[in-house]
Each structure stands twice: as C-alpha cells, then as structure tokens.
Length: 424
Ligand SMILES: *Cc1c(COP(=O)(O)O)cnc(C)c1O
Image (cartoon, rainbow, N blue to C red):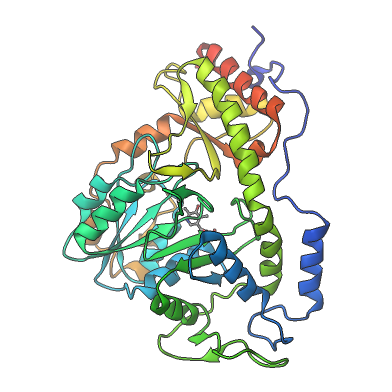
C-alpha cells in the first residue's frame, strides 16, 4: 500500500478542486447591486416605497419555515440574545445549554445576565439529551437552549416533553440546521423561539446575519423592538421617504439590525437552499454506502423523529479503536492530507474550551462566582467526550460535489485506517 500523504506519500485524491463555498452567480450579483443602487443600505433609512429587503427576507424565511413570524438580525449570536430577552430572561435566572456547541448560546445567556447551566450530550448525535436537561432543572431554571448540531437534530419530542415537565421555555438554536424537519415540521418551530445564523459558513450564507422565528405574536412584537432600539414595523404601509421603523418603546432594545446588502444576498441564497439540501443528501447517501462497506464507519445518526437532515458539517463516526489509539486530531490531519480539504474533530466541549472564559470579563463577575461556576460546570461530560473522540467532521461544501468526490473521501478514510499504525 502507498505511503500516507501526511508522511510524504502521494495523496489519495488528485489535484482536483473541491466545490467552492459560498456559491453565487449573476442573480446574486443583481440582488446585491440592486440593494446598493437603492441607496437604502439600512432598514433605518428612508424607504423607497417598497418594503425593505430586511423585511422581505424575514417574511420569506418565515414562509420557508412555515411559521407566522421572523425577525432578521445581524448575527446568530444576536438572535440568541434577542430570543432570551424576548422571554424576559435575566439576572437570577438559569438557562440549560449543551456542552457540545459553538460557544454562542452559552455566551448569549451570560450577556443577558443569567447563568448558563452546561449539560452533557448524546454520544451519537452530539445533541443535548432530555435526561441531562431534566437532571439540571432547579428552581431558578427559566429556559433551555437546545442546539441541533452538525448533521443531526436533538430528540425534539423528548426535549419538548422535558421543558413542559419543568415548566420552562425552549429556544432552539438552529444555526447548524436550517431546513431540518422533525415529523414533517421545521426545527425552530418546536421551541417558543428558533434562532438562526447566516454567517458565511452556514448552509444559508449572508456573510454575517441571523434571524429569530416564532409563532407567538407577542414574542414577535418584543423581538422586533429588541433588535431595533425599541422600534418596530409600523401597522400601515410606508410611503416613499417614510420610515419603516416606529418608536414603540414597550421593551428597551439594542441595535441588532441586518444590513440591506446582506438581506439582498440572503434573498438570493434562500432560493437555492432546498436544491442544495437535496444535492447534499444524495451525496451523503452515496458516501454512506462507501463508509458502511469499510466496516467500523458510518454517519452521525438521526433520531427516529427526524425526517429531513440539514448537513452543516458532515460527521463520519467510527468505532472506538478503528484507528488504534491514534488521537482523533492526528487522524483528522492524516485524512486532511489525503484529501486536500480540511477534516477536523468536533470543537472541544465547552468545559475544556478557552472560548468559555467568563472570568476574563468583569461584566460576568456577578454570575461567575465560585458557586455560579459550580452550578454551571460541576458535572461530568462523558457523552461529549465520546462524541468528540469518535467523530470526524468536514464542511458541507464537499457534498455539493459529485460521486467521484465521495469515493475520494472513502478512499482517504480507508487509507488512513489501514496505515494508522505508522501514525503513532
Ligand atoms: C454559528 C453558530 C452560532 C452563532 O452565529 P453567528 O452568526 O456567528 O453569531 C450560534 N450557534 C451555533 C450552534 C452556531 O453554529
């Protein structure tokens, strides 16, 4: 067998390029140029008599999710802050969050002055379990933020039952799950609010951006004001030169508004999303056929109620020991070298991550006391550790390729598996 690429051998894949991300064409350019030429670069700028792109995108994204309301914001992180504030969560409150996630849901809880209570995840999907949620409920718990991670979704039925049992609210962080469905319904519609990110790497890309969805008209009214310095859309149509935001002041907000240029790009990108989902799913199934033949390998599973995947990061799961005792970081480097495309292990669980360092900011001192720290992180996280040690991730753009690309992925994994003894 040929030498591993990381040890100087010939890579399993030739010099063919991988699909590029983000994807755009002339239609995208037209949307962007139209926003530019409108001179209306922000929602808070005189109207040209037609609804802002920000509002049009929010309405389109609500329709996409089959939910009555959506508010666009500037980041997924802001969407989480707005969602928490819409539920009036603040100092003295606790919010249950998973240990396996991008740090944003946890930092959002800190930003509203509440304490994040960090719980373990399912070792197969990396998502918060209903059992871990139930075990963390205290008399201070007001909400939970569930994250639909990478290529899977949490056990939505179990999580919803657990929050109802506890009498708390649910926010779904769908930054990695646009368009995923559970028993025919879009994720993000099972919580009181769903939060999304449109950061460039996500499956719906706008550069930087986010949104909150809800079916509750009161939460919608609050979310509008929370993202636009206490202003909301007016009830009447806005004439040319008019203002599409009126001062309401029912709840004090901040400025988390989405730029019109971003909204223009997102209008274009949203129209491509379902076709991309379909293509990725086809390639994922192709890849899975190859992985299963290898033995010891497979995809991150979906819980039984999930009936459509949204693949943000594709996860190859392997049986512990499939690469001997070679650490997953080293395996990922070796597969990366074979493919000429980044493959990585999941981010460190937050209890071991430098991303969660509340002691470095004075503002968090009131919650991040010795007692607060213990309430937040005083648990074991075996599910997260197992998930991390047995998962290799890569970006969804690779699944926009063709069957030959999937064959290269399988060949690279096989080659590193067969040659892992030499990696030690
Ligand atoms: C990307 C991401 C966010 C944050 O989104 P930004 O738009 O980058 O602020 C939040 N939660 C999860 C799970 C994410 O992956």
